[in-house]
Image (tube, rainbow, N blue to C red; front, side):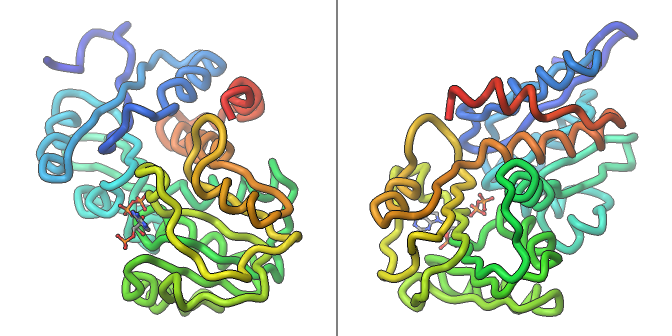
Length: 281
Ligand code: ATR
């Protein structure tokens, strides 16, 4: 099948991941396209890590104009493209690819802007001086560290199942601010102001075991994952009487708006999409 065609044929976009069937990105980009009168379609591509490079290149060669990249491909995507934006270069992870011509695939990372826009603009959280804990050290975390560290946080701790990945990531970003990495068992109180879950454990229906003392009545717990009802992480936070639990719908919509801007040159209004998605949260 070829994706390229005549002048009235919609431009082709999509999201690649594994798994990806749960993604709301087609709905979100569909609403953005309608609101901004863009002739485009947006599809799901479930591609395994072994096939990622070959299949992504094949899609672009057949006319695809842009891809969002989700787990577990964000780091592989940074190696696939010809050029990285400064924020993707810093993250060494890509969640948005734009195709300009056969010789030029641009990789960007809009995850960090998506998270900070949701925390600050949609949820009204001032991040300055806050003690922040991130669970996970994969591609999703790489994208958010730079923008978080720009906020003059009080402290940023990354904890991961594989502690060395968290430590290495902290070392890589140490020039940007106060950051450290450790394993889950090394964590101690006092309670954090904000805990962000960026592990994919929830996809397996799991919440990793955590030491006591991390969550207090002032702690905001943010799950980058999204879906209906509670996640294992938000259930854990609720059981510890967190001040607030929230899921990643807003981050998803805000990062999508930045991808759309890169592809189409227009930043769509995110509020109508957030409202449309609210009853799924
Ligand atoms: P993403 O792009 O979403 O970050 P990823 O790069 O595959 O995806 O990273 C997945 C993250 O979830 C990693 O931090 C992983 O921990 P490891 O580095 O130890 O692999 C974490 N993760 C996945 N399953 C987990 C589980 N059952 N318990 C705890 N952490 C888990």
